[in-house]
Image (cartoon, rainbow, N blue to C red; front, side, top):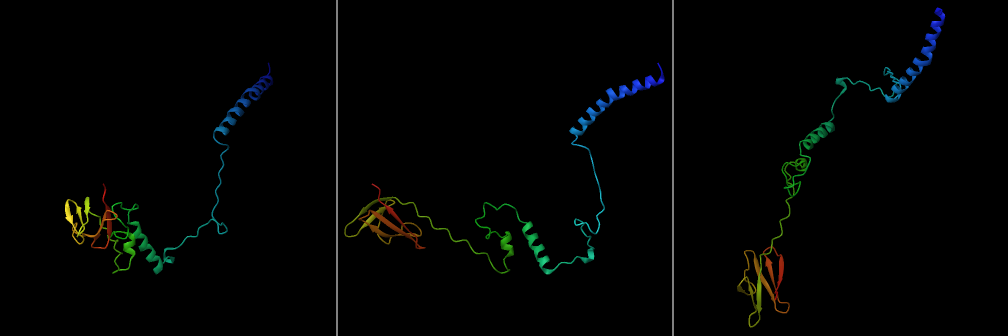
Length: 179
């Protein structure tokens, strides 16, 4: 056997076995890694539309409007994100951002007073005669009598079997006789 024959047989072996194996494993690596890697870098130039010019610190100055907006943002940033569930209105809280933005000396509007609650009434009977009376909470009462601290009896209606009481604020409640 000559040297050239062994060289040819080695080359044939490389072409027939090794080259296909390299191609299979190389293709597999390309597929698993998402393809060939490539990268490029360029220097940002004057004609590049994405280039951000640098600003020297001495070129930066705040206008009064900018300063006021920054102060307002600081006031709001110090506030909690969620509303306090125990506060009835965001204006009534002394710490609320809206209350802080009101001019000095202006108080936030007071919440409206709660409507008075009618007392527990048990109407037992209505008796008509020379003077019409009603038995309310086991007491005989006539028109004008006090039923509770701020409530008084203003009407006894024998036709409708009901009484009407009035609070000192003017709120009226009617109760019917239940038989």
